[in-house]
Image 1 (tube, rainbow, N blue to C red):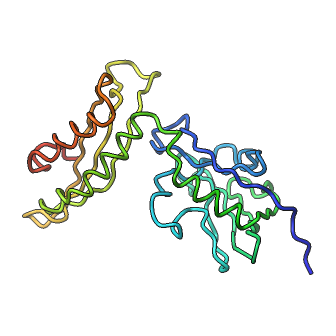
Image 2 (image 1 turned 90 degrees about the vertical axis):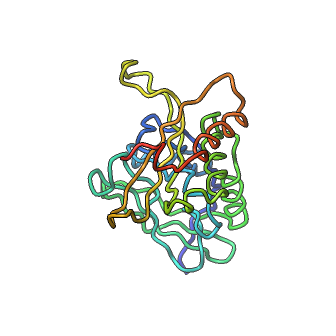
Image 3 (image 1 turned 45 degrees about the vertical axis):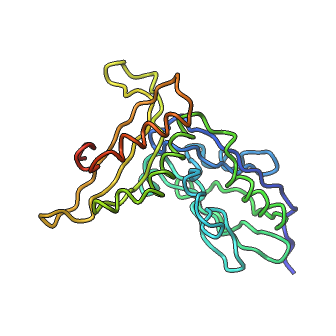
Length: 237
């Protein structure tokens, strides 16, 4: 019988990346018994963002079943094909979750050790992280609530469009003022099919007003979008 590794504790930590333009949402970074093991072997890699944790539990990036599943657990800010990524195979074996068969395509000689977690602790931590909102800044909360409001409205479908995403836009202090967009929210939607048979991609670049509450800003931004055909008021990408 193969010896299993000692049981580790999984902690998922939300972190807004330094290069947030690569993904404006916070990454959900796995710590192994309090240590960022993945950072040690793939320092340029980012964990998948919290946007990927909004669906049902079986769709979460670190969800496991008895069937082994190969997962890209960190990726660079460019693409995995460009600078490499870190992959692991994960599965559930009774009261344990196993991570093994690591593959580091940026440095094949450096990989973490095989890991084992208590299944109950592991699944409870996934559920806790998926529900965690404590890390959010106001811009994150506004983007999340605005997306929920717009999806619930069915407004884009009325105009033959599909809402693709709503994301926070953070200030970029290193850019000259004339080049940087102010803090706000970006809304992107697609026209399913136009009169000429082509599709189009549209964008709102919405600006926050810092002396308004989160609720007031969500209401103000939603009212602006829902007031008219969105194809007339958004910018064609």
